[in-house]
Length: 319
Image (cartoon, rainbow, N blue to C red; front, side, top):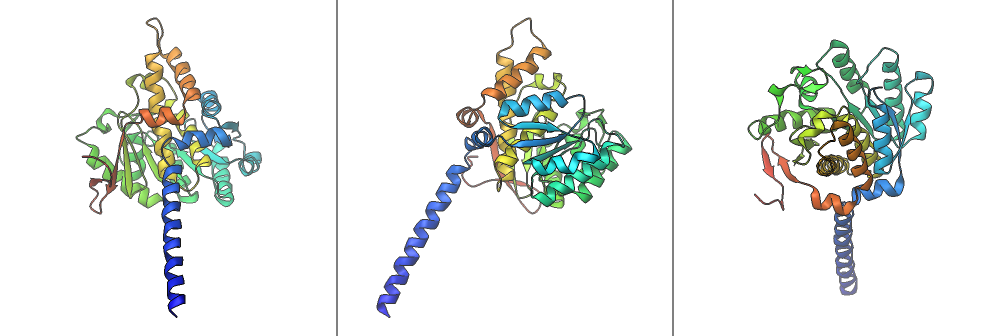
């Protein structure tokens, strides 16, 4: 009996050591630096049903970050293409009656395959068609992540808010003064949908309803380039596909990476260059993004969302 007890204690100690090591390894594997490297190593194929304004930019940003793009928005092939891919990016920026059924079919197929699915509700709140289509997608497809500006997310989360076409309304802007209120309804929306919600703008928020990253990377000139948000959505999908099991951290890593690339791109602009060159510099910066650059440049704080919607710094974060 004593021998059995000694063996059990030794076995328990060994198991505890193994569990502790597994936890340590898991934490090391999911440092910010690991996320872009996994994308480059795995080169996930991403199916994009996106708008024709930024379709080329989305393709190029996926290639730049290490992924591989394919575009297919016809109902006849949407499910088949999705089944071949590692992730699906649905963007409603140039919505029409032909592509809506393809979005729904592809989304359901991706769910059946266990692939991550992202919704970019471009212009939700600007028209009845966009808002109702986004709501229908949310009802019929399980989204891993939803990325939009504050006005788009507000329109879907609260049934209110206004958009300036596809841009956020200045009245909705997330500032230090409005951060707590924005975090509360964004967190509630994440819990309701079961998705990681990323609100991007001057201040970025990424939440799964329990924890929230507040990210302060980026540059104001990013607003002068059409499609930086669309490019980010495509890149997030690649990060999700290459980093299964940790969607919150994967989305936050992609948002930080894009923001850093916006900063680095601006630093490369010559005095005679403008927004066209800036767009190219962003893509170049994404191409050169690596784990070390991301880890060094990411500007974020991680919070825990309390039951009353307020934010508290997560363990390990300095006040």
